[in-house]
Length: 115
Image 1 (spheres, one colour):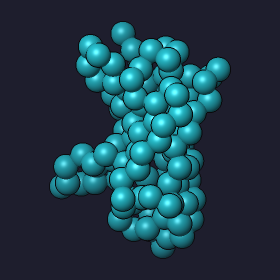
Image 2 (cartoon, helix red, strand yellow):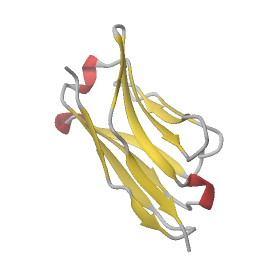
Image 3 (cartoon, rainbow, N blue to C red):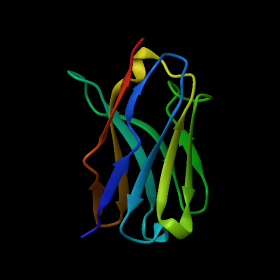
């Protein structure tokens, strides 16, 4: 069973930065994509960013230019660097790993942007 564990959430002021980590239990080459999603209270889960093992990266327009997804392949870890954060970035952030057999999810890490 694939396991994903997110960490790095917390409280940050508007304009500040946070870096989230997603530690996966298997080699990153096992997955078609690894993505970050987020869900704010009362909202649907929203896709944020994705990366492939080959290094292709995609971003939701709402975070493009502010967030950056990256990976540490030897450590089977994917990061989400969040800069110039806004109130609307507050949410629980989830890591997702996709294979041909389906999707795997972590339990999430909470991010609160507040002054």
